[in-house]
Image (cartoon, rainbow, N blue to C red; front, top):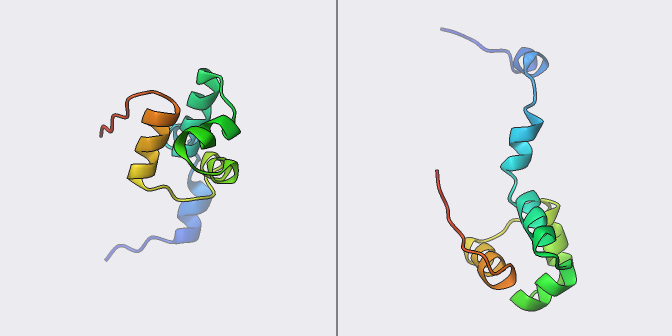
Length: 85
């Protein structure tokens, strides 16, 4: 049997902050919104939601359904959503 001590794993691990940022949907949406040049208010208006909800998504403080993500990307940002692995 091979036991791993979680504390030991945590203290000896390193965080890959760049990869973590790239994998966060909220941060990707925020960057895309800024590239398009619109405010959170404008994006919310386009997709029929609130600025507060857009803010929570961008700050990774809210879950997002795939249908909502699609609406934000395709309607709000006028881009095509492609999901790849």
